[in-house]
Length: 312
Image (cartoon, rainbow, N blue to C red; front, side):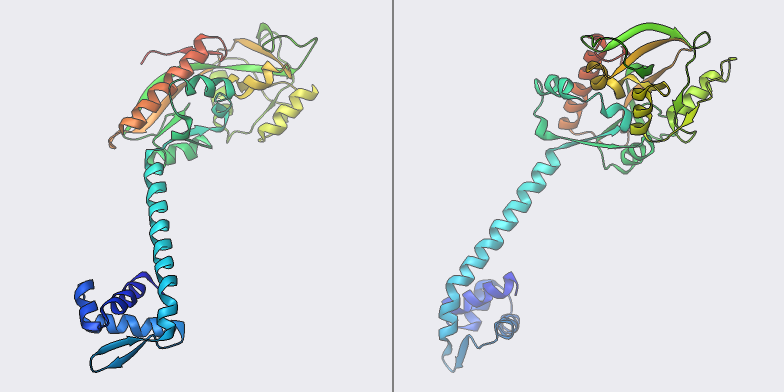
């Protein structure tokens, strides 16, 4: 049973004639007859008696009339709801976030962002750096936030900040407001046992590329690709780890870990917003990107995020 069958039924009922119903619906008379036959077949009974003077509704047709109006009204409501959701979906801006940077978008950041934007207009999509790059190229996100922008073609980049990688260890001593931040460490002099991800991880490859030009050996005691397990190993004191500060913001603030800046080697990765240059950016997307960049720079300038703002 479909909408066209119901509309044909009501037109016949009101006009008491298939030919006049065809004129009302602006379709051919055979088409109206076919719609009626299919509807009668589906409901399992005749709805009209054919006479030389037109058609006469059966008792079943009279009973079905109100139900038909109700069904068509439901169809209309469903169409309106779908159209409304589609409009609201188009108004939403989708932002691609790699897993490490997702930690930056905590309650403090979102509260700051909410001063300028309605958060129900934003959808955050997190994934690996590779997945975010693909999403930017496939246009399944309006823009992404990335560390590594190598290999991106026809992309427009906005520099945001240079984020420090920090040494993360088991918490020591009494909790301190804002997290336990100790003196910077020179890994040439004092390198603890480490737990790091394998070489498939972009951050690990970055660390190795920095160390390649030095005599520093950061071979880990433990290899682990799960961020959750890496943090657990560090929290238990089995080994320290090196992570982007954005990954640790909330946990550091709760003094679950000791966070130390790394004086040597210089481990800092640049962060960019990235969007496809061949695609016209909507006004809403441009507004959201502008405020997201400003919010990230605010977090850096306020010392909440260990990063240095980069000029546009």
